[in-house]
Image 1 (spheres, rainbow, N blue to C red):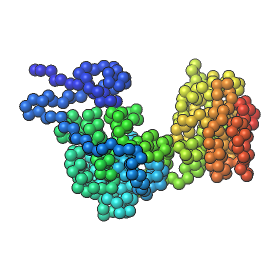
Image 2: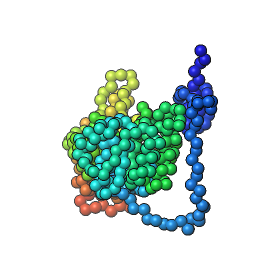
Image 3: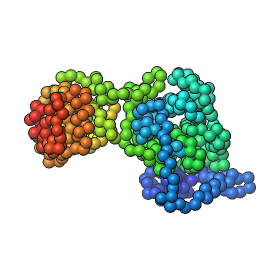
Amino acid sequence: MAKKKTCFACTACGYETSRWAGRCPGCGAWNTLEESAPAPSSAVGAVKPPKQRPGTGAEAMLLKDIPEDVTVRLSTGIGELDRVLGGGIVEGGLMLIGGDPGIGKSTLLLQVCANLCRDGKRVLYVSGEESAKQLKLRARRLGVDVPNLYVLAENALDGVEEKLGQLQPDVAVIDSIQTMYRPEMASAPGSVSQIRECTSLLMRLAKESGTAIFLVGHVTKEGAIAGPRMLEHMVDVVLYFEGDRQQEYRLLRAVKNRFGSVNELGVFQMTEKGMEVVPNPSERLLSHRAKGASGSVVFCGLEGTRPLLCDVQALTAQSYFGSPRRTVGGADAGRVALLLAVLEKRAGQKTYNQDVYINVAGGLELSEPAADLALCMAVVSSLRDESVGADVAVMGEVGLAGEVRAIPQCERRIAECQRLGLTTILLPRENLKRLHAPEGVKLLGVDTVMQALSVLF
C-alpha cells in the first residue's frame, strides 16, 4: 500500500514544503510548520486550483487628479465601538475582530447589525457556525427585532459572493472566516490556504462594491488570531476583545486601524441583553476599592487618547521558601522584578525574603512605564502596612538609578483625577515645571523614589 503523502504549511506566511523543519524557509519563523494534506495533482478528474481573477484594468492617475470624496462614516449606534473604529464604519472597509470563545464577538456584531438596520441600512449576516434558527434564538434573547436584516447560513464562499452581489448590502458580517471555504480548493476549511484565499476574495469584493465587511476570527492558545499572519496585514482594521468570560468587563482594543488611531480602548459590560457600554469606566473600576487598606494605589493610565483610573494592588508576605514567589497580574512580570530590585538597592526596602503579589483590578493590562511609581508605592505600602490616602494618585516612570522620569500627557491625566475627586497627585518634578495646578488639586513633584517614599509615608 502506497504511503499517503502529506505536506507542511507555515501558519505565518503560508509557505508549503514536503518536509518538516523547525524554522520556516519562507519567513524564518520557528515552529510554525503544520502538517496538512497536499492539493491533488493535475490528473484526470483531479480538482484544479482556482484560477486567479483578472485585474481591474484601472489606469494610473496623478495624485492631484484623484477626486477627494469625503467619505461619511456609518455610526454603529455603540459609542465605544465608534471610538475604537476611529469614528464609525468606513465604506469598503475590511475589519477583523478576534477574541477568545464566548467573549462576545458575535453578540456585539449582532447588536451592530440591528442598530444599522434601524437607521435604514441593508445588512447581511453570514453565519458559518450557527444555523439560521440558532441565530434567531440569539436575536430574540438580545431583543433584536428588525425587518430588514438578512441572514445567510452558508460556508461556501462562492454562495456568499453570489448573495453579496444580489443584495448589495451596506454592511456584511462573516462569522467566522475560519469556517469559510472555496469549493475549488482541496484543502479543508480553516487551513492556511483557505483562509488566505477567502480573505483575498472578500477584500476584493469590499473594495469594488463599497460594502463594509466584518470578519470574526478565532484565536489560538497563545491569543493570536488563527491562520496566517498575513491575514492581519490584508485587512484594514484589527480589533481584539480582551477579558475573561468570568469577569464583568470586556475590553475592545484596536491594534491596527488604517482609518484612525491605534491602541484605542472600548469598555463594555456583558449583561443578559448583550453588550452594554460602560459610560464612566474610571468610576466603575474604583467603585469597589477598599478604603484605608495598605497596598492599594490609584494610577491614571492612558489607553489611546482616553485617561483611565485603575487600582494598583500589591501584597507582600513573609516567604518560607528559598526562592520567594512573584505573582503578577495585569503588568509585566519582568518589569515588576526590575522595580523590586530598584526598591531594594536604591530605597533600602528589603523584599528578598518576601512573597510579592501584584494585581491590577478590573482586568486591565498596564504596559506603559508611567505605572512604575504606582507599583513601587503599592509594594512599599504593603511592606510597611501603611495605607496611601484615598484621594491620592501616583504616576511616574522609574529608572534603574532610582530616578523618577517625566511621563507624557500629564494634563489629561490630572484632569481625569480631578474629575473623580482626587485632590493629591504625586508625579515627576520634571512634569511639574510645565504644569499649573488646577483649583483644589495639590501636585507633589519628586525626583527620586526615596523622595516619593518620604512624601507619602
